[in-house]
Image 1 (cartoon, protein in one colour):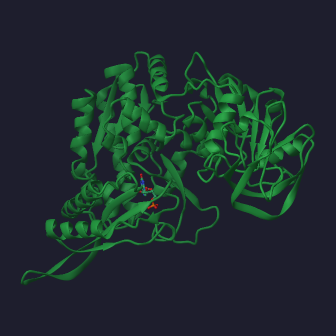
Image 2: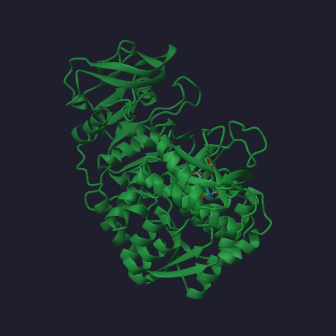
Image 3: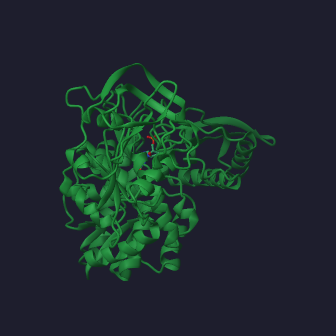
Amino acid sequence: MVIYFQYMAKGRAKSKPSPKASRRVATSGDIEVSTYLEIAKEIDGVQPAAAKEAIPSGEREAVIVIDFGSQYSLLIARRVRESQVYCELVSPDTPWEKIAPLNPKGFILSGGPGSVYETDAPMTPSYVYESRLPVLGICYGMQVITHQMGGQVAPGAKREYGHALLHLGGVDSPLFANVSQSTAVWMSHGDKIEAMPPDFNVLAYTDNSPFAAIGNDKNIFGLQFHPEVVHTPEGKTILKNFIYRICGCQGNWTMGNFITDSLTKIQKEVGKGKVISALSGGVDSAVVSTVIHRAIGDQITCIFVNHGMLRREEVERTFNTFRLNMGMNIVYVDASERFLDRLRGVTDPETKRKIIGEEFINVFEEEAKKIGKVDFLAQGTLYPDVIESASSGSTAAAKIKSHHNVGGLPSRMTLKLLEPLRYLFKDEVRQVGLELGLPEEMVWRQPFPGPGLSIRIIGEVTKEKLEILRAADWVVMSEIKQAKLYRQLWQSFAILTDVRSVGVMGDFRTYGYLVAIRAVTSDDAMTADWSRLPYDVLARISNRIVNEVPEVNRVVYDITSKPPSTIEWE
Ligand code: XMP
């Protein structure tokens, strides 16, 4: 999956971050790999909104979120999908022709930063009301309904932000079925409703908002609060009520259905063609390769380039899972010497990234040529990447390219893209992986950067340093897993610094390396907090590293958050 973050500080950005300086970076080797390939081909990812193929055919149904730009819009889509109904996010200017094939059962209008009275404020497209389908407006979405249907919205004296207590207004509405009479909700709005549109009723209120929930008898509803966030504990029930009781959805979006349907679609699309994919050991490339293999068997060949910067046992585990357990066709290339040769004497982080990206393409292409005629390249593109590419008007490749400086690669391959996961969220991909029988360990792997350990060795990357880091990293990983903290942490790893310090061991003085430990919690890597690991876990890690890795005599724990630091050290 690809994430976005404020591009801050350190060697990566020397200038001060501007508000527009948000960049995206891959969080796993998967996207890195597929992005290198995309860049090499100089192709843009296919834009979204041709998604009818994502929904299980037969009883097609979907809820459509009109995205007015709230930071929570994607979260609304996830909540709907968690309720087993397919959901897509579309911009307010999306034409009806693109939506109709999804067979929408209802619309949700998201929140947004704007005010309905601003010039160019985005409005609900008229087909939403003309369709006579149920509509749920959230925050800005509610204000737009009010504004468009004859009510009045006014700037609030002050922004209402935070918890509020919602009281049901005594009107029996299916939207609030099984919701407590008084329940906590999360508010975040500036403007507020002064007068409801004609024929609307108050369904619920708070101390500050007399119109916290409104509705009419045409199944048009507005909520001033955010039901999609965890701070609204009964929000899921409200959304489910909308989806099932009001829109009348059946709930056919399950990963089992998705797989069954994908198999037929992949078979149809590929026919007798040949597919290649790049395996990296990460979740997305693993799932994409497995689902395609399930569909077309040996017509897919996976190329697994070992660039020599992987963690201990990663190569063996990946290889065994796919070749031995899944019986897949794998071309394994140990190119570590080649990468190390090119990295000799290189200390600049961005140059390391660039070299690894370029060399990866070279190796991949050489191997692909040996396979003979190939028609498709499988990629683990996910829904958030698709959405972001569409809304920003630039591709993931362009963005990562700018981040990783992997530019100027000639257009050499002429493959079609096969992206069976492009409508899935990461958690859905994990479920698909589990249903396809991939090991939990692989499905729940923490993100690992494409350039691997090279950006966790400060300074020049050498074979010796890679071995030291692998040994230290192995200790961190096993102790974190032992303490059952692995899944709670976004990432946890060791860094081999170029600092050496004096120590004492027995009767001898030592002069060894300083290893740093980094463990962070995060939702999306845009921001991260250092994890308050228990002292005894830290003590065990430190103790084991200095005992088991002779070259290291000092261990420190990184207690900075992002921003101002980044997660990786380089
Ligand atoms: P930073 O260090 O920028 O990292 O806070 C944010 C997330 O991105 C990952 N990362 C990378 N992933 N190639 C990748 O595929 C890279 O060059 C790269 N640099 C950072 C990092 O592990 C974290 O999850």
